[in-house]
Image (cartoon, rainbow, N blue to C red; front, side, top):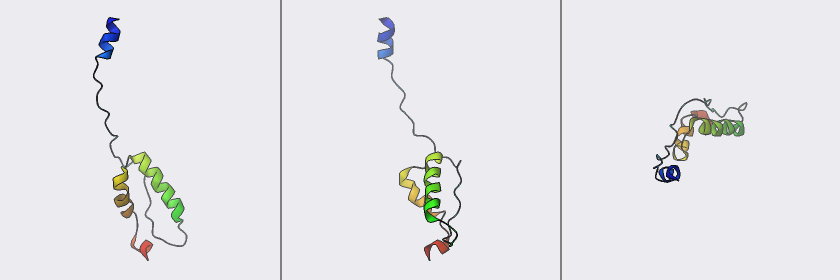
Amino acid sequence: MALAQVLGNLQLAPAQAPKEQNIAQVPKFHGYGNENPAEWAKRFDAACLTNNWRANRQKNIAGSFLDRPAFQ
């Protein structure tokens, strides 16, 4: 009974969001004919999960991997 009371009074530490990392690499996307945009997007999504890139930052991060020809 005493153990249950002590456990009931414990304060749990707040959960911390995982720290962003750069474990999974993403290649630049140039928009050349031999590049598959769907495959690139799939790799980028996987890197987002692996690296703990927050949703509100993913658009900016993706832009850093797009080379100028990709916009033409």
